[in-house]
Image 1 (spheres, rainbow, N blue to C red):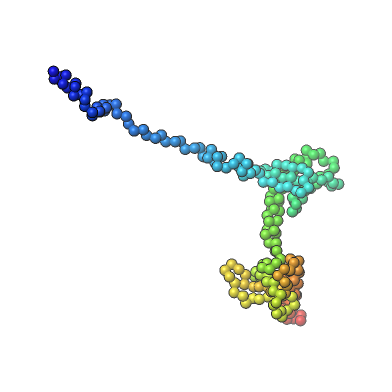
Image 2: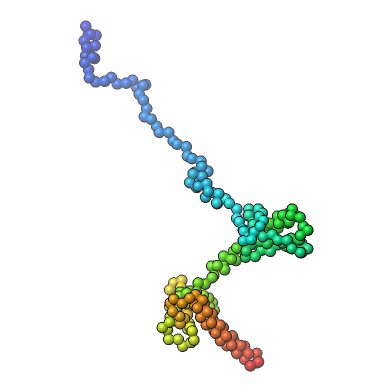
Length: 230
């Protein structure tokens, strides 16, 4: 009778029976993702064509190149000529490498000679390129605001057609207060603001030649007196 009453109460009990302790599920722990390989990351972030550009060797190309050689890590396209001479000649100029060989020397000997001179050729080509870059960076664009060196100072060109000149063509002002990083000398040139670069260059060079003559004469007089040859 007692068991029957207990069974009836269990059937109508709304409270769910707790799961056994040994069958309780543990919360899922997220698995750590493996870090991508460093090389794969670089390859994914850098396009293939950009990577090829970074890894491409240095190249030196003559404008009249008719032969090409890989010298060390550099690709050198050079001008090859036959001429009446006794030996193989190498000339590195602003345009690049020129190789001149006698008519009787076979091509394989010329190629071997170029390979044997590879270190010297690449060094001279690199030096020539660096000189050309320095020349380009020092090139003056002759216009209002152009800067040129003068007796250890930097001078700014000022196109000033209304200036009352005491000298012919241009006058140097050395009393200016320079801004930080800016020259304090200004050369006022009697030209219009729309003057052509050649006109500005000629006016400045004419002034420089006059000043050079004056300074040279002053130094001659100074040292002539000291040497007793006046």
